[in-house]
Image 1 (cartoon, rainbow over the protein chains, first blue to last red):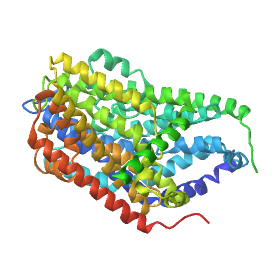
Image 2: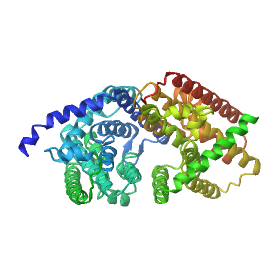
Image 3: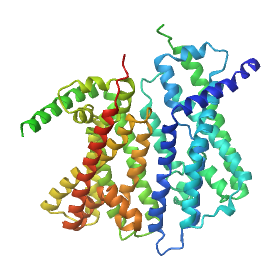
Image 4: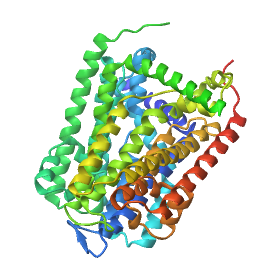
Length: 269
Length: 265
């Protein structure tokens, strides 16, 4: 196990090279990811017309949330790791990885890390540009940013999203095509994860329910923590829920992997 | 006129072939209906959450907004059923050289690529979107007359043409960029604009998304026609801009095609 760890820097380097081979794809992705922010600015501008606040938000605090969400997405969202893993299982290229003296989860985790680093570099300029342009039209509340609470929540979100990705991908041992399942979970992440709107805009009873689901800790919790919108007790509760869900998915992924390998048939030369 | 009939016949043959292929995976068909419905539910939930806090957005009430969102869904689902699947295969065909087989056939490549695949699930979702439009109109006590309904259908076609123009332009980037899978993300990101009421926009945003990329017209004009009746100015503007966009997209595709070098051995 310890010996296999020495291979991780090489895996990370290969992951980076693989990502930068398609740098245009990355740049396009980063550019397009700024589009929802533009739409939010226009749409919420109309919603706030003649109103100081909507729920607990002013226009400036809401747009700060959406801008910070861009950063959260860059750091913690897997790109196409789920489809890559699924392809490896389906097409049998998993064979060559199984032969290596490296735990698959660790191997995938290193590639995920490399992917996030590459994407962060590609997204840095477009995201910075978004912040600059938005700050020209709205006074973003960047003074309240809380890095001490935000960074742990951000890293927890990356761990949670990665563990959920592993669980979804490992269903490929049983299912021929998992894209429908992935898109179904995406839609839940968008709605119950606070991607489309901050969850505290929901009616109170629905907000309560959302706080017990894992999706809230993928986007809403890290973004709200970074923005400094959460009380200390709410942050502690959120972090505990986030890590708890990540642990649940990691255990589930481990069980799926074990069961899947028993079913897996390595065919072909 | 004869070439047009020839293309129509070809399209019907392609449709029949694609439908047979689709029906081989019946479970997939139902699963995708659920997936697409969940995305539509997400949009409606967003409308509900916003109108939980306000009564009107840029003069649009909640049921009017539902007409707008459901009209957008209707157009998008028809597009996803008939034209999008073929276009989305283009980057892969360029990368692995399978485009050669399309170019060898005695029919326009753009036509063959656009109509080569079909998804049946979105047709069911388009019907559900139409039902939601009907429900919202009933809530508004609006009964559109026959000419308005006819115009609505015509404008749906114009909306489809706009979707087609944008996605064709985006996938044509594949002739310059090897891996252009991000175009799907780009397509969905840009088309979020279509769900905004046009009256909510001003300045350069309104100008760009009306004249350069007529996304603010795609669902707004059909929805406004249903809600308020025939408005000649916006209607003509929409028809003109969507035709221009389609023409530009087609030229861009032809330009890209000239760069194509087969990847096969």
